[in-house]
Image (cartoon, rainbow, N blue to C red; front, side, top):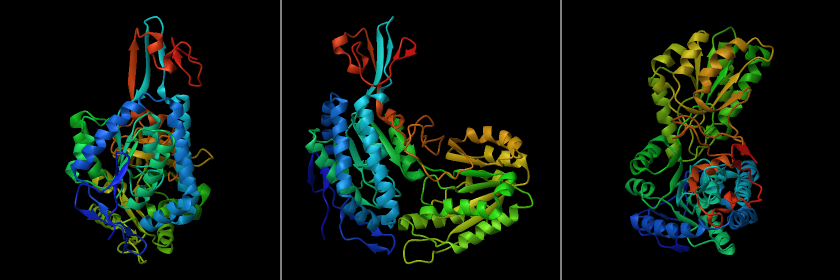
Length: 521
C-alpha cells in the first residue's frame, strides 16, 4: 500500500520512521487507503534546521513579498477547491456543501488574504517612537513556528493553511505543520499547494514543511527545541498541557486552545418574551450543529427555576430526541464523548434525553441532554464542567439568583459566555448581577445570541482564561491581533535612521498608524 511522504527542506521524501497510520471515513468507519508515516526525531531535526535557515531569509523580507505568497496560496486553494473538498469530506464526514465548500474553504482563503494585507501594510507591528530618548520599537519575526491543527476544521484551522499558519507567516516566520491525524490527506493536499505557491513567489526553501505524526516525546522535544520560535496548538486538553509543560520549561511561547463549555445563561424574562418553543429551538440548533463539534458549542446552560423551567427542559429534550444523531469526526471523539457522559452522570447529572451509541453507520453517539441542580454543580464543579465534545449539553437549574451566581463563580475559563435577557427590562437587575461574574470567566461575552459562530473580524477574541486557552491576552482568530502571538518586540536605542526597519524611520509613509511621542499618527 502507498506510503505518503513528508515535506522537509522543499522536498517530498520518505519519512525517517517506520511506523504508519491510516485515516478513516467517519460516516462509514471505513479505513482510507493511504498509509501515513510516524516521523522519528530525525525528521523533526531536519525540519527545524531548514526552518532556521528559512527564517534568516524571511526575517529580512518585505511585507509585500510575504503578502504575494499568501495571496498566491489563496488563489491555488480556490483553483483546487473541488479536490480539496472531496478529500476533506472523505476524512471528516463533514458535508461537502454547504459546510466545507461554501463556508469553511472561503473562510480559509479569506483569512490568508487578510493576513496578506496585514503583512503588506504592517498594521500588526505596533510601531512606537520616543523621539526625546531616541528609542523606537516594533514587533518583528519571532522564529520558526510549529502549528498543531485540530480535527474539527480541516481547512480554517489546518496546520498548513488555517489561522495560526496565516498569522505566523504574516509575521515573517516559517511554519512546520503537524497534521491532525484525522485528516492527513487534506493537510498534504494543502501543503502541496503551499509549496507550489512558495516556489512561484520566491520564498525560501522551508517556508512550509509538513510532518503527520510523532511520538509524544518527540512532540514535546519539538516545541521546546532552541530553534523554535513559538507553537500554536488547538486540540485536546491533555495533549496540549503535555506540550505546554515542555515548552514552558524551555521558555518557549506556546498558544493553546484546549477546552470550553461556553456557558449560556437564559433568564426567566427572556423565556417568557421569546416563548418556550423558540428558546428551545435556538439552543438545540446551536448545540447540535455539526454534531456539536465546535470549540464554541454551548455545552452548559444555566436556568433560574420558575414556572417555565421544566417545560423548557422537556421541550429541548424532545428536540434532541427528534434530531438526527449526526456523525462524529473519529473513533477517538466517539470514545471521548462516551467517557464524558459517564463522568457527568457519576457526578450527579441526570439524563433527560439520549445516551449510548448513535443511530447511524458512522462514528456517533445519541444526542444527549443532561441536567443537574445548581447545588450539585457548586458541590462538584470540576466534574460537572467536563467538556463533552460533541452533541451533548448539561442544563444546570439554579433555585435563585444567588445560586446562579455561585454556579458562574465556579466556572473555569471559557472561550465564550452568553446571557439571554428580556428586552422589556424585567431581567436587567439579574443581568447586572451576573454579568460581572461571567465577564471574568470568558474571552467573548454575548447577549441574546448563541456562541457557535466565530466571525473572522479584527475585533474578534477567540481566546479566554485558562483552560480555554493558555493565555487570556491573545486570540487565535482576528487579524491583526492574532499575528501578534508570533511576533517579538524589537527595540532600537540610538540606532541610525538607515539601519532601522522602514516602519520606524522618519521617512516612513506607509499605511500603518504609529504611536509617536504619545500620539497616534
